[in-house]
Length: 183
Image (tube, rainbow, N blue to C red):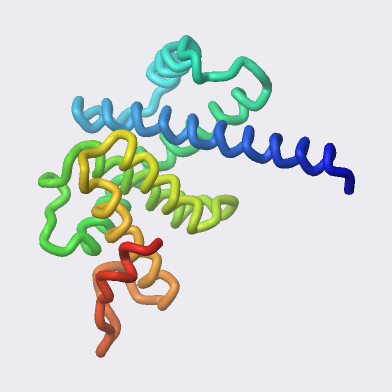
């Protein structure tokens, strides 16, 4: 493979990842607003309004991958809205000493978004969902948001990989706090 071809493929991959990041940011904006307004309806009017708002942003591209990013954003928005009760239950089970309503609105919705990707998006690698959630928390959350989000998602992932329902540790399993900081 030529160097030029490798660079072209790398640039295409980076463009794809940027589009996915924009889609997650767009979904987070919708979820944040839905949470504040306590209106989880996911009708076409609200989605169209959001699309018009994000299309005006400089960061939102005007090419075909923008359409793909928007489709991914809609998939995330609709999925979180439909699965919110189950996602909230899983978050609550894994968030030791934290009630969902005590979490910041940003953190709560980043967790919902990432958990939806972990549980329902087979095309998204687990580590990508967690890394993207951490980056969203760094960008939009408070100083400790990224560590908080990472800790909860790490616990969900560990328990899922072990086949244990979230919030129920294995007998004899010790939660390693340092490990939850390294994902």
